[in-house]
Length: 253
Ligand code: SAH
Image (cartoon, rainbow, N blue to C red; front, side, top):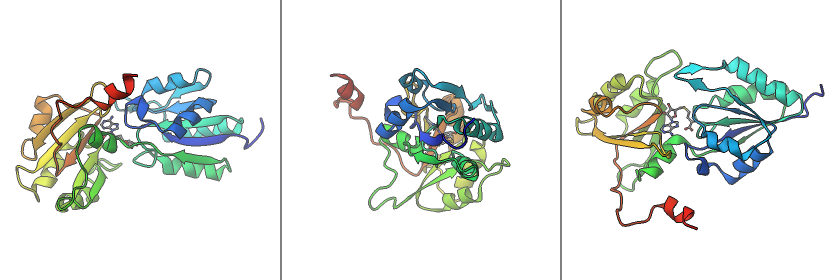
């Protein structure tokens, strides 16, 4: 086995719609010898490479198929054999994507590793539902926070975010929805706007527009589930019934 001839790329697959990968990402995907992919990646993307070894390393029904240690070992093993290894991750690899651990491992082994960004799920959700994350005179920033820490607690940052006037986007927020709602209720009004977007940018995307008061009861009543992003502080623009959708435009050729 020759050492250190391979290469690893952490590649952002985008939020769900397989066409939302970057052009550079697609080129890289097509040249890969090995693709290690996560659960929230569109499997349609895998069809772009007929010859690569493809291994699912994500979570199914909340249960990881492989530990982070096993994923690192697999990635390094193929790279040491000289393969071009693509670690295909949902959204962007640098946003709650455990990229840090993988970069560290590769660098420790002297294996070249690069990152190709992807459109994060919260950006996909905001665009798809026409929810501006910033607005002149209204919202000067947005925060992106996780809904729970590694040891299953409400993150301190989420408590701080609930007090700010920023638009707050929560990823992985469904598990502790009621507690998150409570944190916001301590600082915001009952009618504070909240939008939940499930399966953003996919064919089965769903949106719930509600208020802080009704957040968890409405989520339950409408059967909204993972994967979903919560957006606190702003609502979507109404859909324009008369405009052709972008997808219809680009697929009409
Ligand atoms: N790196 C990813 C985030 C991984 S954490 C990114 O940049 O998007 C996983 C969380 O992302 C999910 O719990 C959910 O909150 C969110 N998520 C991922 N894909 C999503 C989608 N298509 N629709 C809504 N939320 C999504």
